[in-house]
Length: 183
Ligand code: HEM
Image (tube, rainbow, N blue to C red):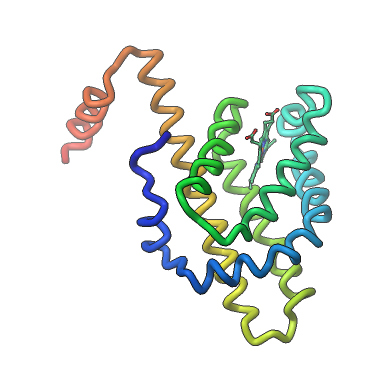
């Protein structure tokens, strides 16, 4: 569990404020309504890449369960409370992708893909609402926060694996990096 990632600090840094958290919690119904279409599009997109399709089909039933996980993830963007428990859940999701050997660029790309589907959802539900832009920005910020946590998980987990395999201590490794960079 990352000690470095303070979600309150990162929220403040990105400017995800309470008014936006409230806006997000009001979009649960929208995300719920559109989740099945997004899940389908998400897996259709992954299926275009042999190694991703193989990963999805590596275990019987995995694809169906993953679809449920992804749908739940989407709706939970509108949880409204973005605290340590929220961070921990995202951290575990990131860690699971490290365990299955998925390079992080695919997670980044997949988030971008999801983002591309959020625009039309907002258009369908809030086309003429004056706060449409504010809603889009709030969703952007929470997706960035999710990605940030997942990537932190990659960083930590990969570092732990490296240290475990080599027997290096973290401080030795960090001092090697800083001396090689000359800083
Ligand atoms: C926006 C990006 C993504 C999100 C939000 C997401 C979401 C999730 C969630 C919620 C889980 C369940 C984690 C758990 O067991 O606690 C999961 C697991 C998994 N995801 Fe993703 N995912 C993303 C991208 C991808 C991509 C690009 C692939 C490529 C094939 C992928 C493949 C998998 C696999 C293989 C598992 C493990 C399934 C298992 O435990 O059997 N995910 N994902």
